[in-house]
Image (tube, rainbow, N blue to C red):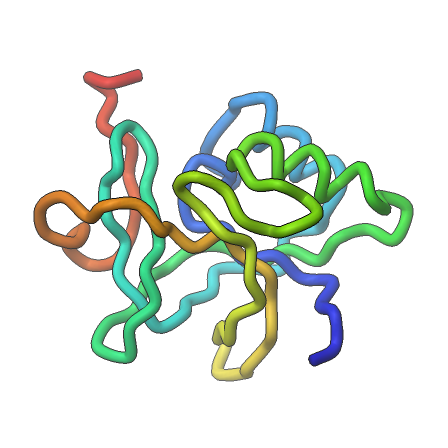
Length: 135
């Protein structure tokens, strides 16, 4: 499989968030637009987790990584998501390439998939909005 230069984000890295890692993403990648993939979003805590499934759609944003970003880009985001950059696996997330859709077109993009325990029901509508009481 060809290594993608795209990343699909669906939580606290999206453009509506101002955390340092969201700002880092926007400095090192260009927003292409809203996108979706097959899966459910679960509220893990103050952040969501994506679990792939053909039965639902999860919405987020698709970014194109700038060529100048290089290894630092993935090292920084892997650190944020708690993923070992050599293995692409962490305690709660793994980094994988997935199929996403934007404007009726299919793309392959990197994303972080949730591997921890799923508590409760998926987020209704497949769109993450922060619970401001937990921020």
